[in-house]
Image 1: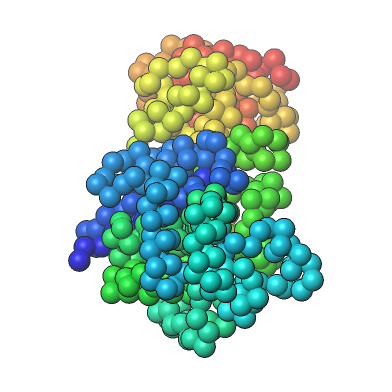
Image 2 (image 1 turned 30 degrees about the vertical axis):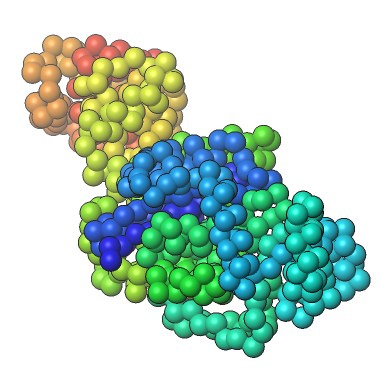
Length: 500
Ligand code: GLU
């Protein structure tokens, strides 16, 4: 049977970066097995629905290049793939489960249950308490029928039998055992006719012929209920295999990475920027921080998955080849933002200048910098070894687009003497007419000139650098001069002389 996996986020706000990792692992597994990667939107909880969240999920998958083979916005013949479009299906299956004796109608009103909750600490609706409550297990068949016929509100609950051990063979965690006595009778269908996550998830995994469920660790306890649902429906033969991914932990200290950690540690914890209703609910993303999507993928792949060996840089194809669920760790993975930055540097350094130019273009435009594509490619080549984030090309490298705003005065003062000033002017004269105006020729000529004057490169070149970039940290000085062009280079050499 061919592998079918799904990424099943709920559109309750910006998709957390951990969700992107879940999508990635599903994708890698599917592609490696020649299988199918499905996007299902789990939006049955209307109270938590956030407009724009579904679009955000889809845009994220497109940005990182994890395109579903089937799903909301991607077609496929097992749809609809948005749960709110499948309401009737769940209703039908919920009633069927009652017929099969594994679920029951419960008529208790929310007010009645509240009274119980107030009276009993930790009250849950379960195999012990249900006998004292108002449901189709305690009421007569006639009473149940007449209530249903009269349109009385009801929910459908899973009937958890006592005294059972439920075994889950998790591909990451091994055998996990739950005692049925510890499980509540979960609501499957709510009074408004909408399914809960548990029912919708199982019905869909079955109907969409999902073979493997790969999801966050927080869903492991629910899996016990899910196994009972598969049993109740008689679907155990095709029950998917489960893999529960380790938590993503804060950069320092303990605990799960939370959306508030972004602001706290000054780093993105979402893939894309998100504008919520309030500033506290608005977040930066990896994209607008200036990460390349390939770097984010590489970083996330290694957040919990440990291939043997020293290789750290993996293309998506290499990840597909190498990925294995066996090598996913059980323990939490620390969200090491410094490592994410390191990956981004590596990917920027390795990127094609034309590709980088296409990323720099909108950044330059937003600053009002006019530049040709060819010039942006030169900027990419000059700066790629010196940046961490894409906006650094126009921020750190602003001097490639506008005059120097700030000079390294300390170095300038150390190097600038009356005799050096004289040589510097002579050098400007030479640069004004020197042909050919290219990096290598210029370098040779200027070095030769410095030597002839009985000086050392260290006497002059720092001044040239400061003239062109304001800083000693700029790119190679001769290449920079060529990129800026003769006229602008001369203007900057001139400007430096007025600093003294
Ligand atoms: N809708 C659930 C979520 O938001 C999906 C869990 C699962 O994959 O079963 O994470």
